Image (cartoon, rainbow, N blue to C red; front, top):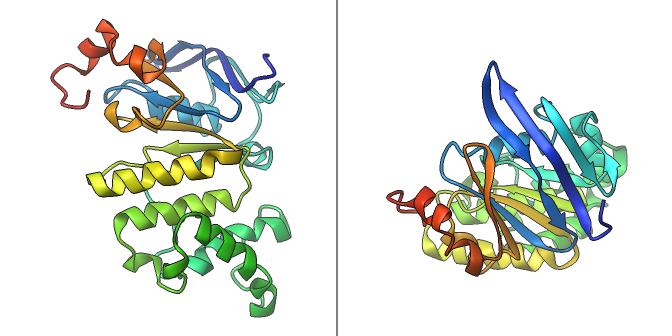
Length: 252
């Protein structure tokens, strides 16, 4: 494995009872980059993500993270190694404040993987400084004491990114971080992703090609479970096969 690549897949394949959802996907994610995995609905993007984070077991092929074969490693061990996924559906505790949500994630630093809601307030207060730093990173300092349920949608996604950052990812997997957003929220979230990518690698699944145009260093386009095209936006967006895949979908 090339030392410049933090994540690599070799002929990654997933079959469901005769249906091949992902076929021979060879992905190389460069360390320190923002890499987008895109494609129309049903292209296999989320299946690839589920394979990378071990929520699904590959039918064939290999997954390498930092040069180590993690194909058979359990999901919790993947996260411990620094490959952390943020979920497509906003995964925060609605009735906890922003600060409390981030503190829950920070408990990993106290107790490995267990989240203990009954920990004493004194113990948890020791995490306030780190939690405030993370909220500041995602521009949520002003929302510190507001319950997550009261946040606008875009801010909720920012909180989710903060809780993901709390797990100290080396490689952060973002599953459609801009789904369901208007233009203003998309711009804010794109700026936020760019900001938090400063000292880590990001692999993001997106449905919409134009959303990742200014954000991604490299784009991999999937169609029917196979890689259709790969490269920077300027190259990928002009690829005739990509244009055809997106034709009539209104997402090109």
